[in-house]
Image (cartoon, rainbow, N blue to C red; front, side):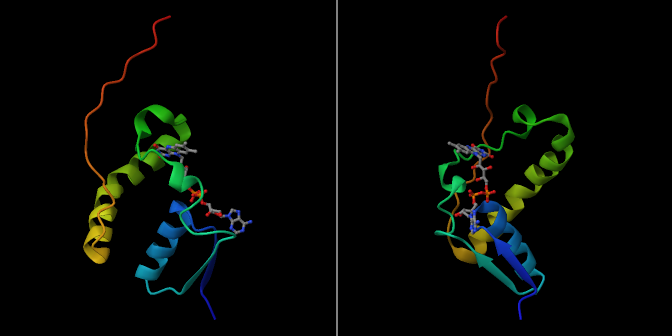
Length: 97
Ligand SMILES: Cc1cc2nc3c(=O)[nH]c(=O)nc-3n(C[C@H](O)[C@H](O)[C@H](O)COP(=O)(O)OP(=O)(O)OC[C@H]3O[C@@H](n4cnc5c(N)ncnc54)[C@H](O)[C@@H]3O)c2cc1C
């Protein structure tokens, strides 16, 4: 008997599964292909919450963005695999009209 079944093993499904497992919930992840080989594999890795999102999603995304460094450190500690997360400043050029 499984507490949760998650369809899709991309970054969203796997992070959700990890979070549930950390709360001692049993989880089954089903993927039609190979976990981590969907859109998540194509992502450039930018966490651009301030420039890419609609207003109504911004609060949620900003909170998620603040939690991400903790998750990255925790995963590195638990797995020994460095996901490559780095804090880097960037410049944003406004479009000239
Ligand atoms: C070129 C590119 C660059 C990007 N760059 C960035 C970036 O820099 N920063 C950023 O934040 N986002 C970026 N994104 C967006 C980001 O990749 C996605 O928002 C994110 O990976 C989505 O994760 P996901 O887990 O929802 O989907 P996916 O990673 O696609 O995972 C979904 C999984 O579900 C499985 N699946 C689908 N249908 C079924 C089914 N019926 N039954 C079973 N399994 C199924 C698939 O096989 C797949 O493994 C980029 C996207 C692209 C395409």
